[in-house]
Length: 534
Image (spheres, rainbow, N blue to C red):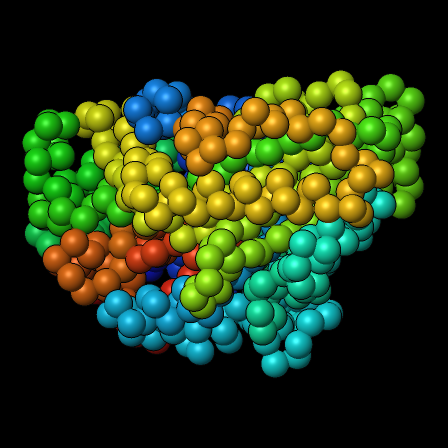
């Protein structure tokens, strides 16, 4: 098999699938897409509700974890990350949120020229196949089919009515001109089936003669000659092998593993590399810093009627649901991780919402693993959209198979703590409105005993999880702590780019998958606009 290509893409996830498609489209470039996971997919992948079966499956999830930290009660918090072609789009909640225009304008104002909302809007539109919303803001013919949630149970309608009774607006398209308000989530599905990055981008390109896809191939390090990347070393089974790049190596391994690979290759903070026993090849102190994620608490209530997923996914009800899905691709098996969205502002003077809500008519005995209660219940996830706290992701050793140390540093700032507390208070206020009287039972978590700000914060520290939006660890920018420039080229190293959520200077206001699709689309244009052949 050929061991030299024009481009090597490390990681077959969201960004990798986009790049593999776009870089091979004109037939000019030879591309190797290298993925540590498998090409095969579980039958659960295409069934939207099947994500709960995949979250703890080591075949499809790297099953990463944080280090215990005092701010979150010294708990270990799960950091799911998709494994296999399609990456996290195989196991995520399918929720599609672009973020707010201010997010991207902030990137541009921080020195990331070409990344304002006006600059990135064409790429969002290029991604999307969405038949509603404002024509000037939404894409109609892109490779990724999007739909607004079609199953709309009465309890979901009641929650929207309760939000309006509490003074919040209705918003049919939070990816349109305004994010504020409540309505139904948009998801990457078609005819009741999940559409992953592999489905939308990679599968149409698989037969191209200039694309080689290597699965079961763990990248150990980037090969460097002086200050230029020339390829990667990979492990296939028990064998190591070098694969060379004429033009560029592109790290698209995600915000956990892209900085890990840079450090394993000798690129990073000299102190971190020295402590891990890695020879420094290029000092770049920002690698693995600026780690951001969306911290989320899950408030829950008993429901007084048997209308929730808790009881609808058991016994004869489940058999009927399976039959319905098999015959019509409708029903409860089409649900993503959120039914109703809420974007709200916790204080005056904000340019946009700072809290996102996820309503689902289900409650969990184990929220991290999505194990449902036996009694009827509902859950509302509450997350701060733009956390100020920053953590780190760094290698523990020179062993490329050892997971890195993930230290999120959640709730480190007063604003993060204030925002989370106010968001939870506002959520309780919504649920206590009249339209929810028909369904609302007792509050399970945190419970009515939770009244003071100290009580709310204690609940967050003891129970909060992430919503799996790791980002920022190879920050784009021009300062001394930036890792890549606005063209996503690693500072000081030729022939090496990073294209994934790790390049975000600040996290976007919502689920990150849409922004990662956009980043990869824009990166493909940046790469194809130059001739980088050696």
